[in-house]
Length: 299
Image (cartoon, rainbow, N blue to C red; front, side, top):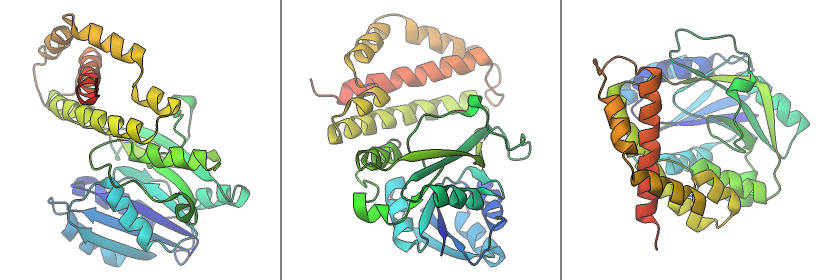
């Protein structure tokens, strides 16, 4: 088997059908790639959707239905069942282009012991897609990110799998990416290995979830920093003295009240936020992140 596509899903039945159909439609010999899907305790009809789609799979399609255990454990369950020489990770809100598998393997033919990162284009809907062409506005400096990345299966035997102590949102992919970097594994970018990432426009109803997610990410950031006392981790997670001083100073002003006031101008909570309201929502989540980070950091 040349390649395993691995993804985990949790309560994304409204997207998963399109995600799987795109993986079934790869421009590559279906006998030479497989899909390993972990249903991580979804409660929204995902189980029935997967079983309905299973007969459509032209390639080997392995499904594991398990109790909710988090993304790191889900990824590891998928790795354990992978038989491909290479493993390609995507997420359950990612729509693959037909050439995705072929382009990842083409890059690995040139860079065998390496990470291959593909291009990710953010879209508000899978029904309105731009041309699959990467541009600098889609740039990401991440060394390893599971929205669209592949690597040799054998590397997990060398550096280990995902750290399952990361049970909340955030940083588990950057953590394994740091270990890969420290092991001397290079990371290459293939702009032709394109996927679309479903990023709907935010509404006022999304703000509370953004704040909760930011606080969870702060807790895992602290965990990441304790595991790896490295300047890359400190910068990536904002665990530096200048970051702490800046956001502590902001909390001493009326900054948060101003952000809440901007969000208070929302007339219809189901309508997308205006650019100003969106900026305020993101800033509010950012301040929640740094407040939580300070709370969980020993003094």
